[in-house]
Image (cartoon, rainbow, N blue to C red; front, side):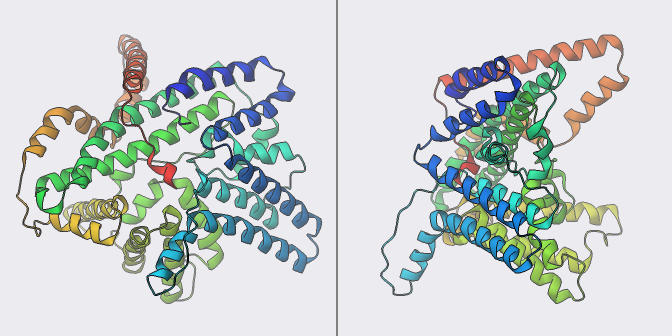
Length: 474
């Protein structure tokens, strides 16, 4: 079940909200847990037992770590067992067949397992591990209430595609959380923004990207190749940030405050800044649980700094998918970020022109990264990239370019505009300094926009429009 579906919007969500607010407060967490399990089981019922087993395993590991806190060797042993269990589960379902394929390419004859991996496994295993790691470090107290641990890991708004919520982010909210009409209304508003991002922007931009990437290299014109890459860059932003907005909005409707996950990443002035703005909760997870424990940036040599960055970005690439293109994608960012760390760019840019040029370089690098991310393998990524550079004998322009701008100009323009702070800055200015009549008029327009956006989005759903979530694959 996805948030942008008629089943969720008109059956699951209304039933869950009504039930949650009708029952007494002591039973609300249990009700949310049950509905979260129903939500997860709607995709593949058998996977619910895997998640339930993981929850129980990590709950017990945290109790044992706390129980033997004064016995260092036992505490380390249980932490190691916990990491092995979580990472072993993730590896078996997501990466084992990839390893077998590569071994077979070297002459082995190992049969593939062809396991379907549980949806969202990369997200909920990381959340589960963060709880036990925080207990091990002493930064969070162990929870003996299994319901609280279960709800933290299985809570349906953030279960499948994040944000990656750490236990300390919501541990107090599991026991007690406040909700009022203002908070609930903000949750509805945030959900509607995410829904419009996903249905109206991401899904329509996907039609351009899918067609461009699906063409043979020689038939794809240079401009269409660039347009397809740009459309995919916008698609993945609004697909994933739209989901995060919906998750944050749903959390607010039930009294939870989830961390932000995106902060206008395409206005970044450097590659490092881009990753501080993109999928922020994943970046913070790797920073706190991998990069800093390795020594972070406060190390005695450049070699150690490079090694730390290599580990983080290798793991980041692998986390996103079992494929060499994802590994190469992670290595590309490792090289770029290591370059910035070691040289001090773009801070060393002394003029506005140099800073602007580096900003353009950053966006070109991000675009190249998305080509790697979108394609099925290194060879396909190279073919697409060469067609962008007119090396494949392809024409400069084709009819597809004209057709795309004719049919999707509104979505391209809206996508580019929403990548910037301009709408938010203009809205904030009107709210703080605008005349009374302007503020009232703007509020009426906002309400109309949300209603129109919702109805327009629903019309696409009723018509059965293209509607996958990219990050469900991870």
